[in-house]
Each structure stands twice: as structure tokens, then as C-alpha cells.
Length: 220
Image (cartoon, rainbow, N blue to C red; front, side, top):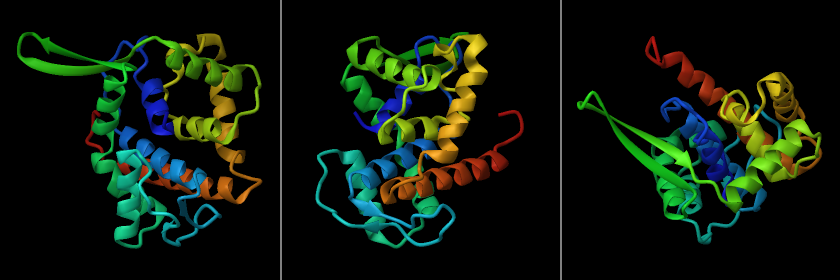
């Protein structure tokens, strides 16, 4: 399962009571796809967060996943820094991932009419072995002190500040979980070239999400 798909499963937890509307989700998802390619050795970018060099495609061969192939195509089309590429990819990233999870039986779509006029769409996780394993892995890292692998650390770093994990964390331990996520976001990318490059993507996502928040209309 892609890191971006795991992010969506966390975001659309079936315990969540509100509507499935997350303004910054596309940026986090785009960053997750780019991190996936960094970890796979398909792209490279400046190792130090804040550097301005472009993303470089090392291997543009098809990955077997259309979502990742679109990232490779966009990166190869013109030189772009990580933040620019995340911004471009975010425009069309979310719906194909949602539809893919529905096709896999991991997510369900709920269409509802409000007062018979307005329609709203919710996406909810479907309990099963894959979703349960994801929740256990996240729980072990956030609340049991387990050391995460690179993919899990990237997942939690990209989810940091989103509030997506709250439904599955006991209220009395939410501050602990949030502190653990902040710790990972600040430190996990150190220690190897791949982690440092992934850290550059994570920093770019934080910057793009912050910029997007500044231009949201009042009341959103």
C-alpha cells in the first residue's frame, strides 16, 4: 500500500463524525507520493531542507502504479523544486487515490442529501486486516514507543498537525501522541541521504500547507 493511501485511511477513519473535507489533504498526499519515490530511489533532491534545487528523476521507468508514474512524468517535464512539484501534483491527486481505495475494498463512499437539497460525500474506512494492521503500527509508534521504519516515520510526519489520528487515540493520551509526531517530524529524516531527501519533501509540504492556509476564505 502506498504511503498516500495510508494517509487517506487515517484521514477518513470510520469513527470520525464530521464531513470528509480536508483543505490541505492534497498537499500532504502529493508529498507522500514524492516521498515514496525518494525511498524507492526513483527521484533525488537536495538533502538539506530549505535547499532550492530541483527534483531529479533517476529512473523514469513505469512503477506499476499510475499515481507514482504521474509524479515521475511531472518531475521530468520541467525542473521544479519540491514545493513547486507538490503544489502542481496536489491539483489532481486526491480523487484517483480515493477511487483506488474504494476499488480495493478499503474505503467506502457515502453520498447524503441534506434537507433534500444539498448533497455531501463522506469517505469511510472499511475494517479489515490491512486497516487493522495500519492502526496497530501507528499505535505502537505513537503510544508504545516503538521505533518506526522510514515509511511509517514519513507517514506520521506528513500527518503531523492534521488531527487525522485523533479518533483512534484516547483523549487522555492525545497530547502524548501529538508530541511524538512532532518529535518524528523534527528528527526522523536525519541519519541517511534518503531520509534527508525525504525530509526536504516533508519541509516543502509544511511550507505549501502553510501558504494554502493563508489564502483560505474566512470561515473555512
